[in-house]
Image (cartoon, rainbow, N blue to C red; front, side, top):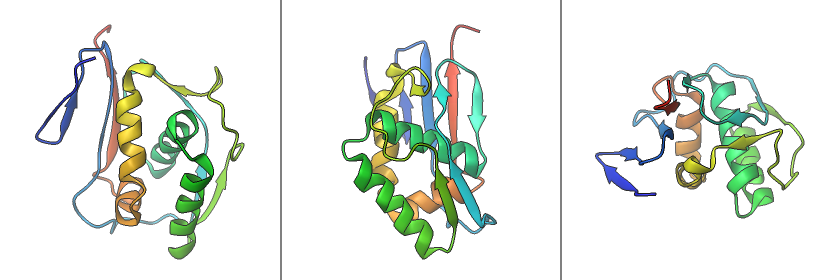
Length: 143
């Protein structure tokens, strides 16, 4: 797969493509007092993930499928949410094997890993989860 970064945009030659944007502004539109991190299936759908719950599920699925140190990554998220007084739950926490019940399309592994790296930073994590300008776009050229 060819990977090129052009003005903060990721492009691939795959027919399936996941991209994410993180707002440059602070996460001022945070209204969440709790957040559930579910595992999901992210393949060839065409959609935008825009709500905190949708973005949390995508991030959590990315961590569970592609994270190098799942326990450390989840603990970092917990610490950030605790600091910001946001309650949370994780579906099947620390289960460290991606399977058929949850996945991110293998063509988008690099983008998922990039998102994991960005969200290690407290500010980036909060902006990704709670800014209405932050989103994940899932697309393909088969429709």
